[in-house]
Image (cartoon, rainbow, N blue to C red; front, side):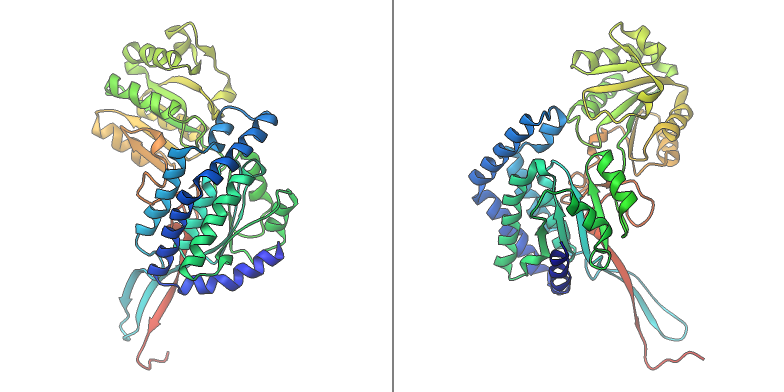
Length: 413
């Protein structure tokens, strides 16, 4: 592990100085390699899937792990999308001139060496490696044992891209062992080699990283996301959004876990919304009003309002208008992603302004909580931190800045 850190430290300055054309060439070559190694990658993923089923994994975990032709092509296009982004390194974020003639600029620079610890999802290997490459950061990737075969092939494609572009292979390294002790070394034993750690996975992993890391952490603990259907909501739109937000992919952190319905429209909107979810195969756990709306609704407990199900389960509650929704989200939410469905512009503006989450939406599904959907090419994860990065963590969020000051012989009196 220390050897990986030393190699990353040596490679990072080379990458930080690399021009955009060289970095983009590496990304495009890696995309070509992914397509060229399609058969090997699908074979590796089949081995991961078989091992995961043997271990008893199911549902959302298997969905996160599985690759097919469409997901492989999406992964390759993601690398090309990142290549198409403007170079985040060297951007002048602000500049001004002082009365004494000093010209001061705030300029974007890479963070340095990034450690990324993640579970299950093999696509994170491609996304994280590519985002760090584009932003000038060397990266050490530690994927989960479930995706070890898939991640190994994807990593080989990234390194092929680096070689093709003449960049050090150590710019993107994959921890070659699945031993959990490697995570402990990254968190507590590499503070002089890692500048930041990004966890992406379940609550247990993220909590461990946040508790044990000796370097700054960018991450989120829960994705307890909400859809609030306001009195002025169009019922057809609300139903479409609620179904998509919950069921499009239940295992992503932007999946809605709680549906809130305004008491003022409960008589007309609650039963159809609940029925649509139940008929689509979603388990509904609700308050007394939701239970009265449909006999299939299970009684919700206090814990349900806090729960990130990551499954075809949703909690439903009637609240007193926008303020009731804001209060519920403030008490039970995880500051991730919340949506309001309404045709009332004032109600929407109040919700968007007062809900303190990383992402707030109006008349749109919470499943848009994704760096690719934000035009970032991809993301490492969604940050619910309030320090440094918040929301989707893309190339810009993987930079810091320094001050560049130009003078003409000035000295301070």
